Image (cartoon, rainbow, N blue to C red):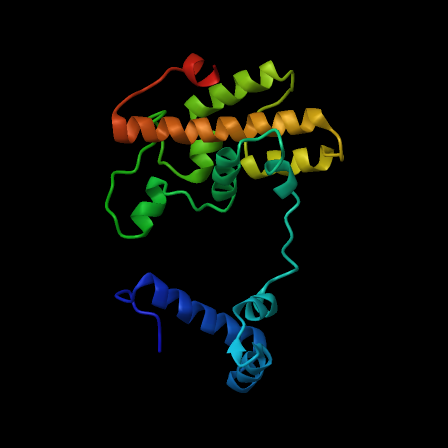
Length: 197
């Protein structure tokens, strides 16, 4: 069975996992053998299947930078979603079939995407610049992923300065997304001073 547009999201996910299983094992016979090896106590153990399908080669070095004691969990969750391009930006909604006029509600100068919203938007760039000045850091944030990799490279076990910088980074990323949602859903706009404060 092929994935069709009218299938439910759950069924599409099941079919995608099937395709992944077939691609990883090289065929139906090998896939069946793998599934039989994941049976324990007469029951199919999904955790064993997950371990078999999991890609260990793709490691990220920024997860401990985002998930630290200084950052609020809701800020960290949003940054992880932003890093994976999972937030419902207008370009993603249009790609899913919704027809929305694509423009950045914050700067009104370009189309909204993850890259634009968190790095290229003039409104966000101005806020990032002010935050970097406050933290006494030079440069500008042009890519959220690059900044997290940079922070991960500076991270040591007890480096509270890096934790502080990363918590500011996650908080401001959250604040930009929150401001975007305020503008769209509540028709309320705040100035830069309000967001920085």
